[in-house]
Image: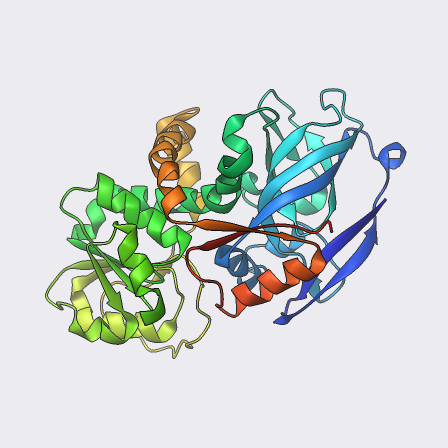
Length: 363
C-alpha cells in the first residue's frame, strides 16, 4: 500500500512537496491495527500554528517524515479500509487528528462504543486529545456541511471555549474589556462570540487589518473593531485583558506600553502573524504567558467530573454552529496541487477570512 504525504521543511515552511511512502496492506498490519484512508480534512491558519510550534509541542513526532521535514497535523475524517482489530469493522468512519496524507496506520487501543486511541509509540507524550478518534459512522452531526464545520471549527472552538472559561474563572483578572488580536481568525471570533453572549459587563474589542474590518464587524460579536495602526487611540485608562491570537511581538509591545499597568492579563494563544521579533525588554503590565489548553482541559475534567467538559462544550457548540452558515463559505480542494496551493496561500496570509477549506490528498 502506498500513501501520498504532503511534507514541509521544518526550518523553512515555504518549502513543501508530496512524497510517496510505503505502508503495510491489510494482511501485513500488526495485531489490532487499522489501515485508514484519509478522506477530508480542514485546513486553516491554526494548522500553520501547529507547524510553527511543532518542535516545542511535539506535533512533528505524530506523523513521521524524512529528516528535516514534517507532516502538519489536521482535523478530519478517515475510513477504515482494513482492520485487524476484532471490534473495528471495515467501512467505519473516524473523526480525529490525521496527517496531510492519503492513508494512515492506527494502532487501535482502548476501543469503545464512541471511540479509540492510537497507541503507536511515536504518538505518545502529547496531549491525549491528539491521539483520540471518534467513531462517527451514521452520525448526522459529522456528515455534510455539519461535518465540515466539525473539522474546520470544532477543535478551534474548543480552544475558544477553554480560554473563555479560564478568563471567567479568574473574573477576567479584573478587566472590563477583553482585546483580541487577529479578530478575523476562527479561534478569535469563537471566543468573541462566547464573551459577547455569556459574559455580562465585558466589552469585546477586535483588532484586525483594514482589509478584514468589514468582515469582522459583520460578525456582530465585537463591541468595537479597531485596526492595528489605531491601537494608540484606545482608552488607556480602561483595565484590559489581552488575548493574543496574532503572535506579533511589535503589536504586543505597543499594547503593553499603551495600557501599562491597566493591562492585567496578556495571554498568548496563536501565531497567525509571524512578523515582529521579541526584543527581550520587559514590558509594563501583566507578564505575557502562553495559554496551554491541554493543561486547562485536564484540570477542568477533574473539576467537572466524567463527561463534564463534553457536556458544557457541547452546549456551547450547539449555540455557535448555526451561526457559521452566515459567516463562512467552504471551498473543496482535491489532490496534491490543490493542497499545496491552499497551504501556501494560508501560510502567506492570502486566504480571505470568510473562506474555509476542506481538502483531500486524493486526486
